[in-house]
Each structure stands twice: as C-alpha cells, then as structure tokens.
Length: 98
Image (tube, rainbow, N blue to C red; front, side, top):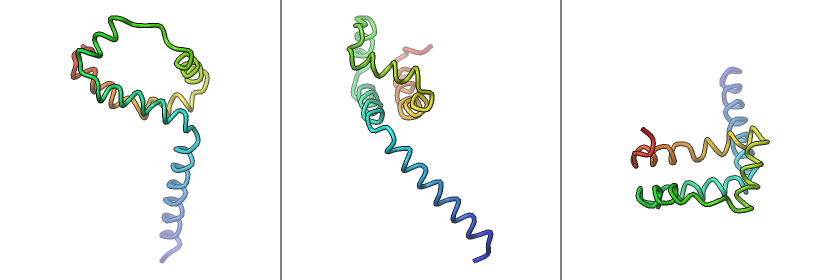
C-alpha cells in the first residue's frame, strides 16, 4: 500500500473510534432520545393530537432533561440528530405540520 492509502485507512479508523466514543458519551441522553422516538413510532395520530390538546406540565425529569439540552449545545445537537427524522416524519404524516 502507498502512504496515501495508509493515511486514508488511518483517517477512517479515527472516524469510527470518534463515532463510537461519542455514542457512549451520553447514555442518559441516548435513553431519553430513544424513549421519544419510541413514543412517536408507537402512537397513533389521534393519540398525539389528544396529548397535544391536553398538554400537561413536564415532569421533574423532563424539566431537568430540557435544562440540560438548553445549556449544552453538543448534547442538544446529539438529541436532535437522533429524534428529528422520526418525530418530524410522524408530525407530517399526522398533518400536525402544515
């Protein structure tokens, strides 16, 4: 292999390691994001609309999670990158986003 090939392999390996480390960096964030995704995947449009209409105040845990997301830009980015596709897709399907 040439020096250039070794460099490409090294860069790819570094990217894989960086991705693996970042996924393990916030296990609580991953759990919360997966819970949100699961909610939107399993809820019907009618259930989501009813929940929106009833709009209950957030629990203490939800408030703490929101505060962390507000203050930590990297964590917020990770959360959005996990949930955005699923949630927005469901909201469009349900006609909740015009």
